[in-house]
Length: 555
Image (cartoon, rainbow, N blue to C red; front, side, top):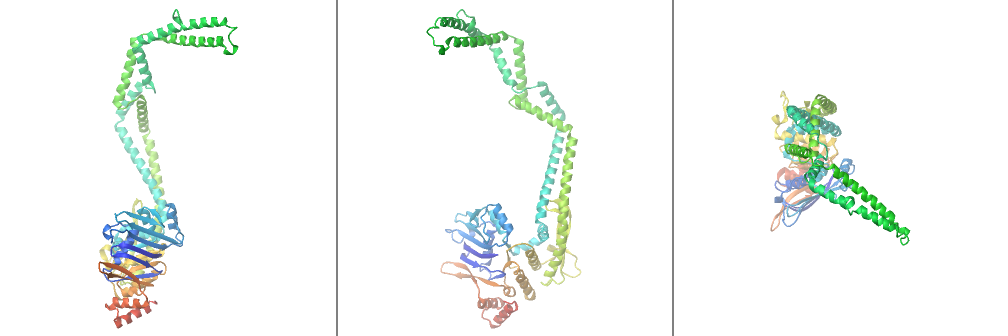
């Protein structure tokens, strides 16, 4: 539950601290005193956009902080742990700060968090129901959400959405495959022509480098032959060549045996050099023998290079390897076309199976929705009829719909408020006051079904009085036995039901107006109720009525 709320530097509030109690907490005050300002501040904790117009003092940051008791809230604990948010098993503190520059910061248990995570935590702690939210009752998506909440479909929907996502993915694959095959079929003749050209070219990796090297050799054959001649003359063929000189040196060293150290091994080393030089000379001689001027070979090499360059330009690539890759892609494309019927059949089978699994899961959800809808309609009518709608009939229809992310159902709440009146959607038959009372009853039903610590009602009792007002107060008091309820009200019949009563009022000083909040003691409550009843807190008759109201509610 919400244990305490701190607001500073927000609109007319310079600084307030409120300690709330379990049960039903009442907030009253004159119109314009600042009750809605408090809700505006609280909405910032639910992720609402910060408005710099609400910052009271432009030199000081705005701070809204709420402390919640969180005993036995495992889902919230799991959410915090999964998002690396610090956790305390007893308390959860959420805070929003707005700096004078307009920068907003959010914290959960002193851990800085993105605004989305602050909202994710806050929505599990508090529900603020203001008058504009009454129109939610007319929306089909909200009605579906209500039924799913009451049916406990959260985990079932999680599993279903995974299956539905698989189905959607299978359909996308099938659609893309059909489009791809259709495009290939349209371009089949051209694709086969391109592949035939590439196959005829019969490219191999590294071919261009080898061709260019051969061309360079043939183009520069005279210079190469001259260099080979010079090298061979120096090594072996000249009148004075390296091999002959080595042989002379080797013979001379034999006569130096007496002066050479055995460990120097000079004769053997000279022999090794001679062997290496002969091998080099033989290699160069073989190259020289293989090289010969062949204009036809040079012409063929040039033609091959030109054919490859032309193909590269045609396909806008810059290498033989890229052409080879293209060739394989074209081949695969045509192979896929040749096997397209088998491919599409397999993808269609996958899509049908995914659809069947999704529908099976959706059918389970539908079963629980129908059961919850029947129970909900009956309970909503039972709660709402005493609130001035004695002829109310309610039907929550769960009807088949096209498969979607929410399943295969559409939900529509149907109402009749008068005898012999046909059931119709709520937006067409209910007044604003009736919708407000229906929403109160709906929230009361939901509150019993979900683990929500705190719910806040903003003048949901507007437009009612007398016995209906007393019944609304009794309903809120009953809700307060299971969760914490905070309500802003102008009705003394509701205010008298509270276990705690806070008054919001304005106070002026020499320079400005301030919103203040005070918790009323028993005597002050009598005066506040008398003021709400008659406009005069000291009116004896009103005070007597106020005391009777408090006695009647058992407070």
